[in-house]
Image (cartoon, rainbow, N blue to C red; front, side, top):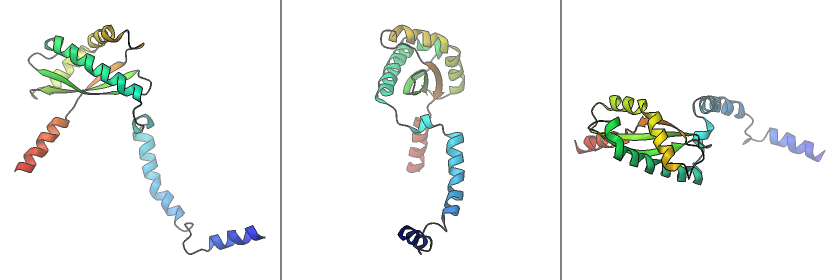
Length: 157
């Protein structure tokens, strides 16, 4: 009897959430749909310590490869590795590159993508004592420096 009175009082309390709960869930549903369809959970989680260490190792070794053999992949261009993102199981690496001078970046990226297997083989030769599996590599142009320059120009004008 005591519990039944509490339930009735909670239903009619003026600050009860029961009148707004259906509206709240209707408002959250599109966000939930967006995050479950477009943003995989593995990208919402923070990187583990192991992922950070392996990504730094891959970044350092790829930078060394591009210093020594960069002319084969991008003739007359300076290619720098700005960031490496790894999947949680360390089987896939997304490598962000910056190309200087910024003209014909798509052609240089296409040339680098054609040589991905060769670059991955050389990376495997360098890290074979530290990693059991060499991750698959996908290259992407890092446009954050261009974005910074654009904002700089807008602020100066």
